[in-house]
Length: 123
Image: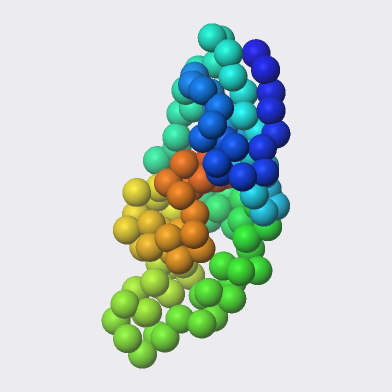
C-alpha cells in the first residue's frame, strides 16, 4: 500500500483506483491510500451530533458552518427548516437534502462529504 498526501481535488482524482481517500483537513488536504490491498471505504449513513460537530472542527469548517447557521433567515420556512435541522438533529444523515445543499454552498464535492463522514464516524 502506498500513501500520498494531496492538496487539491484534481490531484486526488488523478490517482488511479483502487484508492481510499481520507480528508485530513483543515482546508484541502487528503490522504490517499492506493494498492491492490486497499478496500473501498464504508461510508456511514449517519453520525451523531457530537461526531458531526467535532468533525467540523477537525476539518477546519466549524466556524464557517456556525456563521452559516447564524446567517439563516428563520423568517422563511426554508431558513427555519435548515436552522431546526442544524440545531435540533441528534444525528446527521449523509443523504439528507439539507446537508447536500449546505455542502454545495461550501463548495464541497460528494467525495469530500463522504470522506468527512468517514472521519466523523471515527471520532
